[in-house]
Amino acid sequence: MRTAIVSDIHGNLEALKTVFIDIATRSVDRVICLGDLVEGGKYNDEVVEFIKNNQIQTVQGNHDAINPCQLKPVNQRWLDQLPTCFIEEDIIFTHISPRKKKENIIDYIEAWNIFDETTYRLCFVGHLHFPCLYGSQCEFFGESQTYVVDHGRYDLALDNRYVICFGAIGYPRRGGLFIRYGIYDSKTHSLEFIKLEGTLLPYGLCEDLF
Image 1 (tube, one colour):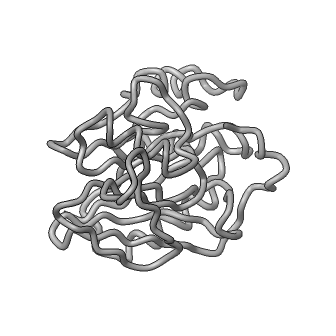
Image 2 (spheres, rainbow, N blue to C red):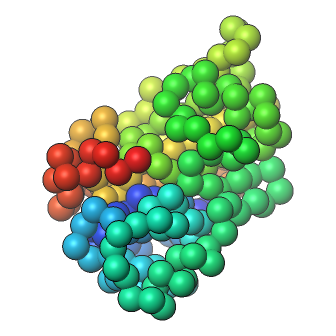
Image 3 (cartoon, helix red, strand yellow):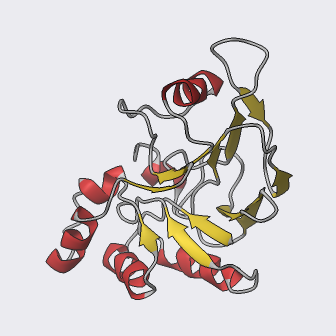
């Protein structure tokens, strides 16, 4: 199965549509959204309705749970009922972290905390707004292996565990001015990091959205 994973749209409807046009060209079996649909851009209700109408499996982000967006009540109720994660065998999809204490995965030490506290083989997260990949196999105790990722295909070792973030649709942190999402292929056990040009939200307006 080829799963497209999108995250952190923050009301940027045009960028979201750009991503779905691209997804349609890539033989994807399904799409999963890792949250933060709203707050930042002008089209919060429209983004929620786009995700709802396309029946995209979605987890709740921190800005979906608490925001000042004055959404239509039906849309806020829909966000309120979203789960905080999906688990499929040894794979978890969530917004911030699978740990009980939700910490931003800002480095290889916090990624190690995830490997230490959970048993998931793959952990897909959003929230960071930049692409990153960490592996559990590392020569130093208390650390994880950091892989340099930008765009393109990355093969995963079957005997390793990983934390993966594909980046954001709404606006970027690190990694340049690109719309980002990714694809996980369970048959080939590979990742594809994708970056697209398009309309992004002004960085200065969104810098404090964590």
